[in-house]
Image (cartoon, rainbow, N blue to C red; front, side):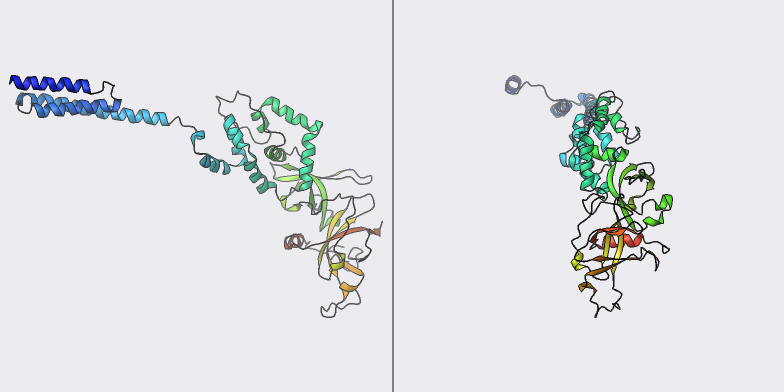
Length: 396
């Protein structure tokens, strides 16, 4: 018996010195305690009086282990709940931002500087600009924007926005409830987007504060009933209204007449100017030699020398000496080209006109107006647009 006690004491002393004394983690302390109970249960199995005590001790330790394990999981969940959207992988965050509408990007941009940098990026706003405004914005509109932001008169708008902060700036374009930021950070001043950024141009267009150049089909017909402008397209400056989803058009003044203004212009009546020329300049035609009967054309027309040009739709017709038979027609070889405007009745002074194929200049008079340059239509989209605008009744 004495030999057994000496052997156990020596073994326990060696075991304590050889093991590390570092504290065990929280999750393992209860497990080690439970293992020790199981060990003593086996060691004292010969003593029947200890059995009830060990069973109660084991059950209490098992419950303690379960409670601590549950507590550890709760603490872990609470720690994970503090994760920010910025902790997402870069690709995931970019996919989320790509699916946000413009007002959503503005709301995200007001949260913090990191999200502001991401939400005002050129890549995101180019997509929105192309989807909504790409069909009506041309090179002339982008030049007008550059002039708009560089002029001292207009830059006061952006300076004022910079002084008031990002939220005040954005509230000019969308209701404040849409772009409201976190109340805990709303007092912090955040700078508006860079003046010459695509985001700034988009917001200026949405607000109606930026008037951009484009062309309007059938000007003033819906509002004022001017049927004389039927199947025509005129240059104008336009301002957008988000409330009505329409535009206000300002037509340039001519002669003694003041600037004409038309409201309620819809999207389908707008187009990008096909030629980058001033409405007061004569377009030098480059298609006269290839015009044949049946070709679709647009021709410049103005009431008098003081008016700007508009573009009128017509087709190339046959000469009076031609019966229209395609096998015997030689109209394309003649120096005279017949232009027909079939929206007008037969006998109308605007029904037909003739131009010189080889030496075409501005032709006309004060009574019938002046005809300028001609452009041939090659796109089915352009031709179908004119046909869609065709009047239900023939004009006098």
